[in-house]
Length: 214
Image 1 (cartoon, rainbow, N blue to C red):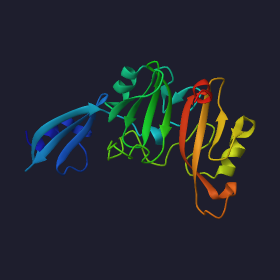
Image 2: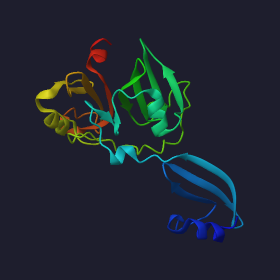
Image 3: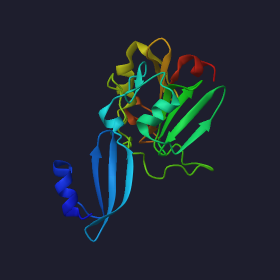
């Protein structure tokens, strides 16, 4: 089929610019054709995934990027597509890895938290997801209470308020009766240990009981 024929069929769905591929949304899927000499070639159909980190803040007590806590692994995969890999961890805990910066954590097969940190899975023997997953924008995560990647540690402590638990190498706060978010940070100046010099970098969300039992 030619590009002109495809344009006549797709109408408003036909993209403004077409180079080496033609891509458009069809229902819950993204349809992509390779294009050569104005003729359609190979076909790919994948789930359409929103930019979750940008569009859906995290609510640690309820959901991860709009994925309700308690979802099964199969339900998450149906929403996000296949992960780069699956890791079997300790005592019934598993993780689905998307790109190199996101792990969704499961306890006994149910979604219970996440780890977000740029490049955290590019180490040792892991060569996972060299390109970020299309659900992910690096350094763009945020929580519903206003805590976000890149803000200072001082701002984080102020927003956490009475929920703030401790600091040192990292800070944490309880959100709901069974959840905790642990925030790591980077320091712009090694000689400045003030909270204003520290910027939030990564976060871990998991059941509070699991954190206390580490």
